[in-house]
Image 1 (cartoon, one colour):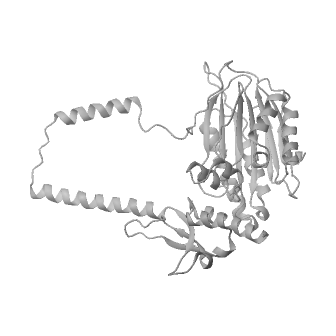
Image 2 (spheres, rainbow, N blue to C red):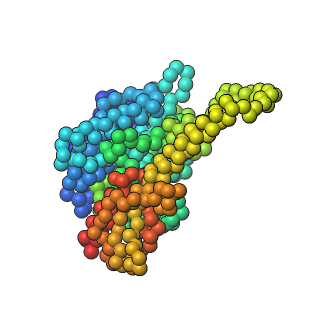
Length: 408
């Protein structure tokens, strides 16, 4: 176990939680880029990315920054601290050129300080493909959503769940701390139910140990420290292809419920577009408008106003269409004339896969990869023109593709 890759802060025994942890470099890697932190109120797991760009630095910086503040009153406060961690990782990369491009996943659980008369709740957060699972009253589920290319393809129906498990690009993530100025972090507020068991882990566990085996371990090993160590050992026994970090958190206080805890799938940052009050006001305005007589007259002044309004609306619509048409990246083959796929180069395009009005996709980057360098499965994938939110995501996709080709 590499305990130097974690923070263990328990000044007094926790009456609310029992917990255990384990982290290991695995069988193939020379360095552990994971980092974790545990205390009586806060649990964090991070998985650094960037290889030679010092992913282990990114995961440690982010975890330590979030862990600076031990007590949180709201989910938003927890999110804000994670955003500060994103800034810290980017600042370190900016002043050290050899660390440019480093990033990290992060998932965490924070015990929220309750206001008087309200039940205690937990804040959940994640970005990237490190996961949080929940075992509650015999029901086992992954409560975070992977931010990865393969998971996006699975959700869109382009590949099946079984294909996703063995996909060659399953390690390409689409969100991480340190990559974008504004990190997209999913956060939830959930109730605390006594005897619920949470598992936080990096993909070194989820890629090596099936969910069924993870569930069986959590159900049968009562001691959280022993269960965490066993899961890390299982990951190594099943291949140990990556660093593995496991944190298990058992809730010892809270509501007692015979039904499994239900986790909302809507991030706390997404608020309803309308409230009951705004809905009532809108209904009132509509009713008022329907009773008023507003007769429009075709005077020269009214016609000028109408034309000016129409022109402004056309400009606004054009701007929105232009932004939508350009706010996307995809990877595809460059096919000129009758050039075959085998002799076609792979390009990164900015824009939509199909032209929108006069907005055509433009070439952003070329790679020395030809169709004949790829197997049939990858060729079919490229022909589907996989899309990405940022240029960095598309670059990471092709970086991974070139690494796979270099291995062969």
